[in-house]
Image 1: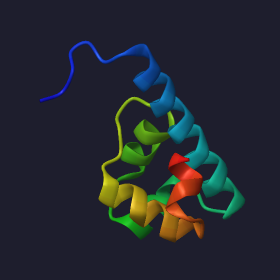
Image 2: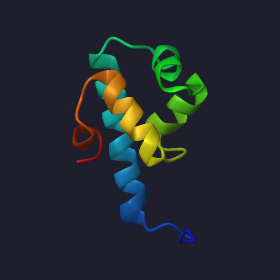
Image 3: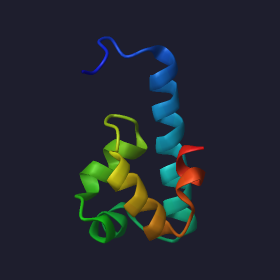
Image 4: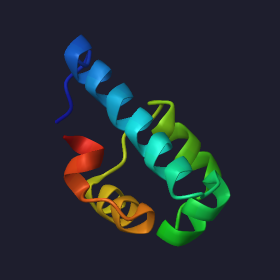
Length: 77
């Protein structure tokens, strides 16, 4: 059951993860559309992850890390 409201530290962490996704995607030379195609998500979903509007689930994080060529810990660490 999710916490309501979500603690501030968790929201800040979500923003960091989103920024890391964006940074790694750009370093891999991928657009949001291209990354979305690689992980089976719409580019709007990728945008929501990068801007911390929504949280990627663990499987999406694994797929994103693989698509951009980084260890999972680089996105979440």
